[in-house]
Image (cartoon, rainbow, N blue to C red; front, side, top):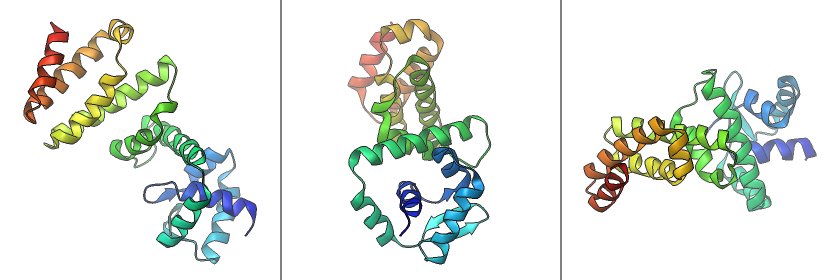
Length: 194
């Protein structure tokens, strides 16, 4: 199998569900037509299936398992980090049908790679948004998980620089914790606000 097909499959198999040729081309810094040529080879070999123009899925779970067996943990995290960044860009520009929970799935895998104040701020906002959306559907346990991650990034420096955002996250997290009967956690964060 050609090396470019193997590299394509390494990326494609890290996607949770379907993947877009456009996203893979951004990750690989290649043109869409170059990536599409590789995808056509994969279609001929019955490795991937086209769901709709530009959107594909791996044809069989066995393919994903085989590719994952040759990927190191470091490679998987690097690929997931690239996927997270690429779809975060799509999400922020509303240029795709990316959902917040799909985006957070990829960041959950590789969030230890996030550094820099600007990236952390963006990530905190995404987890806050995910928490709000989950709480809005009464999925309070999931919301609490997203708020926990956002709160984990908020040291005193962050709270001082982004006071309103921090306040909003604390208030919504506290309400969520009370909703799932995590009273100690809710009381702890309430004390921090006072």
